Image 1: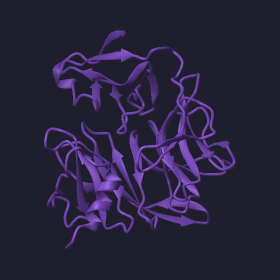
Image 2: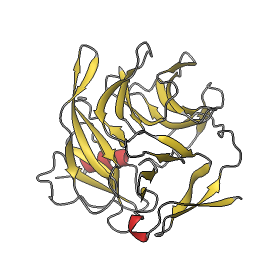
Image 3: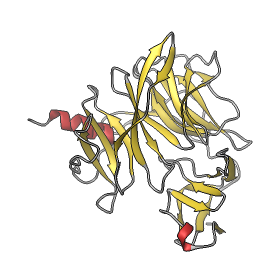
Image 4: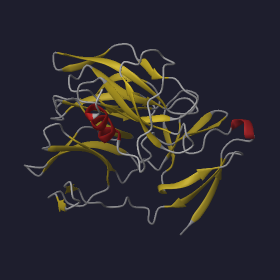
Length: 300
């Protein structure tokens, strides 16, 4: 095990919540809301992302109040290789035909036939690809990027994703055209669409905590167009991993309101910006998708 320390900032006033945001005068240290990047980005005063640290073993890091980052280095300079597998309801695993690779952030298409994922590149970037499980074929959607959080549109025609330092982008799944901007922001991580595809839930990490927003979305001539972003819930806690129920009436999400990570379910749209919170589910926490489904099954 190799431990290294890096210092960010010069005063305790510049230190923010560990694992979320570390500000230091002219730049910021960030980890994505999904915690799978294991990288630090210098966003600078102009907001352009610059990778400054990419050898962190996933999740093995912390930040002191004085701005010191301590982390465990990845075992080697090369990205770790992983296999993609099916897992059934009783835990049986079946490897897919895709050869091992530096895969992260898997997202299954609505029809279950394709997988959107990110692939770490040797040069330090991370791009979005789509793997067709029936054809055993990979299609590249981005090139030379730093991206994560790929999320399928309900009709499986588009994948939206976080382009670090720029915003949420969309790309056609055939990879025939260049990705297009959907909404602008330095750290906006898309997470979930309801079945009708008319709204996208995402996490905004620009403050000292994660907050959930939603974005009206419409398909015009094969391109997604966004309306004005709307806050889902404004709190003093970190809320993330939003997941719509299939009918779009409920939103499950993860929050640290109780001092530990728990899953909450809340009606959508909420009755007011400061309305009543949802109730935490049983321990261990379910996934947001499972929690939303369980809430729908409860009697009125």
